Length: 113
Image (cartoon, rainbow, N blue to C red):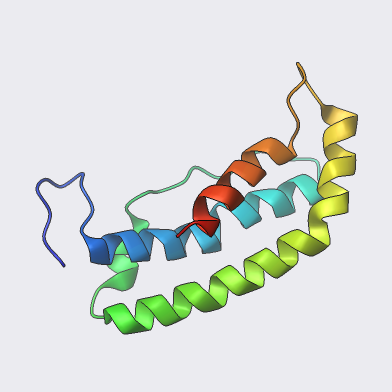
């Protein structure tokens, strides 16, 4: 449950911590940047190992509860932001890609967990 084969692999405990970190700092945080249309639309780099220090000393049950809470809140926010993301993507669409596509990929990938 807690062991790894190398410093770059995740244990099952790490996977849950990593998912929590993504809920807090990745997909919806990036959607908020897009929707804000501010002068600096750059994304902060994603630290894929941040969860290790954040999850230290916590139980798997506590992490699972937190993940469920964050996921529900982010899915609700994404549903509300959907029209704004679609409109922005039509304005910005580059090379046929839409801004919502990366967010939808994250949504669909994470929604299967």
